[in-house]
Amino acid sequence: MKTNEIKKILLAKRHELKSRKIQQEDIAIERKAEVFDEIQQHADRALALDSLTRNWEIASQVTDALRRIDDGTYGVCDQCEEKISEKRLAAIPWAKFCIRCQELADQSNMEADHAQAA
Image (cartoon, rainbow, N blue to C red; front, side, top):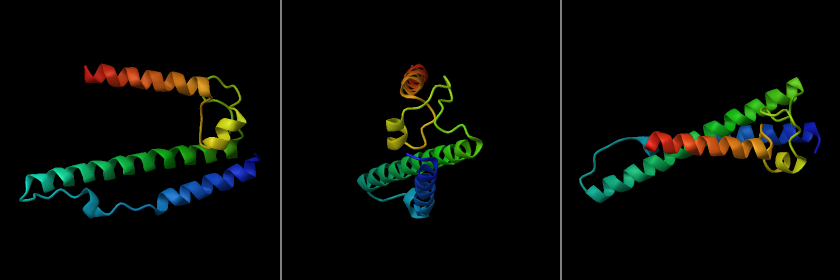
């Protein structure tokens, strides 16, 4: 896939993420008379916040990928500096790690999460 095509995909993704709006009432905290209503609202709020966080993280990665296109480093792993496979970039155009380095980063993050939980 050519860089211009990837840039168009990334710009479209960034626009899509910016157009997603979470309403204030989705994350508002209010007391409910019924315990089950309050539990449901808490779960809905947690989902809305998770979605907001996920969208922000992807938008940040998309912006970073656009920067890498502009500076000529797109498609090169940030960790090992090897070329990222075309298949990976076609699936996740904002990827900044090759598969091997991404797996190592994921494993490291899981270990850090387990250490914090303990």
